[in-house]
Length: 283
Image (cartoon, rainbow, N blue to C red):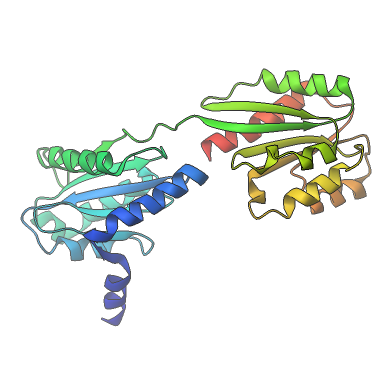
């Protein structure tokens, strides 16, 4: 009995808190591209439905309790609509649910520009549509907010050899990844890069640099980036003529993400860049 009380206290929240929690989750979606899902549940006949929902929810989900006549809303953080499908199947298998007319709508949110009022209205409309359908616990999926906004990824090429710089720049410029715009800047040495404010923006940032550079070398630049509080936004490609295993291990320990030995294969290098960019886009 005490475990059930604790679960109620932790997982059910007043409807007045939904707007604040929604905006907090949206901030994470916009900044970190964290997906979340809202499940709208409406049962005109059953005030006991809240307890049924609590029993079938995951411990990480939050239930916002709205007045009778309005849908309750479950927030599934860091979760796509597939997990909502599993939740709905659990509801359908629950004997007590079959005694009531329950409609469900599922909204997966990937777009960091989605507006609170729009999401709330779409959820209410779709759950009312679900109630018009036949079957046990009918539900509707609305995918209005899944389309990602375009992202800008900054790319810094730090290299003092103009020929190598040109080759890398041409390779990066011809890369095309859906929904990503690449903003490329070239730096002739590490000191010039660090003195600029280019790397201090909130953008996801690819840094492609040689290990040997005038003034500040590649490891010094890397050390500066890895000391920053938001260092996870930097994906660092270190290029070198050195082929020592010990030096590679040292570079990885310093925080290098990819270690490229010269002379490098342009097609392979291009594939490595694409792999990173696609991971950024798809999360």
